[in-house]
Amino acid sequence: EQAEKNGYDHFMLKEIHEQPEALKKTLAGRVDQATKRVQFEELQWSLERVEQWDKITIIACGTAYHAGLIGKHVIEELTRTPVDVEVASEFRYRRPIIDEKTLVIVISQSGETADTLAALRQSQHLGANVLAITNVVGSSIAREADEVILTMAGPEIAVASTKAYTTQVLVFYLLGIYLADLKQKITKDYRIQLLEAVLDIPNKMEELLEYSEALQRYSESIKDASSVFFIGRSLDHAVVLEGSLKLKEISYIHSEAYAAGELKHGTLALIEEGTPIIALITQKEVNEKMLGNIKEVKARGGHVLGVSMKENMEMLEYVDEGCYIPDSLSLVTPLLTVIPLQLISYYTSLALGNDVDKPRNLAKSVTVE
Ligand code: G6P
Image (spheres, rainbow, N blue to C red):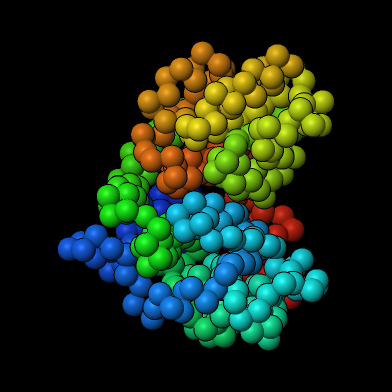
């Protein structure tokens, strides 16, 4: 096992560091450099076919569900097609509005999650076309779906998912650009700008992974907290949900993630002197609003770690501590901001002496209900 960890103390840390490579492998062959277009050999979709679908429903569990939330934002933003995201265990026990005019996308690292598989079968039964995004060739979900896009993350051993998540998110960027191009919803210039931003992510991730010492120190400082709050708006909100889940899974610290504008509707009552708050501030159109939300929690004694792009130096005037990601298009920042959040959960779990790779009560793959 030590050999498999390749010099890292834990599989989770190894897998966090494997992300740039996993993204490159997932990108390989999917961007045509000559035409600057996304190509999916596995999808033989014509414009006519794509236009049969008047909505998209994304279904998944856990971390894969969080990747789906980013997928919704990206696909809606680029294609203006309505997208719902549902957790599989809820979907399968209601009467979902799905038919042949729906494209269902199921996401599953293992391809074996019982609830997701049941949702896939139910969707097909209702007449929908099901596309699976999975990391395992030959898994039940890969076999039963109508179409499959494989993430090339390689085996993920740690229970807390990291590289599977970022490769799933990457597939949504590619799929969003692909659909938008097919439906002629974006200009060529914008398509090229988006693709360049996506292709640049692995290098920016490498850069980000070099600076983990400050995050280790920060993690030591929150290890005895009774609660940690994560806040963000827009895409940042989807990312904090994942950051909070990661922290809960392996540190066992209670944490919650909120859309920052919702604080005033309840959560603000929980903020007291010293409460740790991790705030993501990367979405330009809501930057001012986020800074306002940070002021609200600071006024109640909250201790704020702000995560933003380098160009946002103004943030430092509002937060107690800052963590910077390389400058990027707002739409693709989730692939960068999630890195410090993964590292914080890892180092917090480590500081507490927990079994990082095998957290209590959790399984890597949930194949029974
Ligand atoms: C388990 C794992 C999670 C994972 C979820 C869905 O709960 O511990 O990390 O996100 O299952 O798994 P899947 O294989 O369907 O992505």
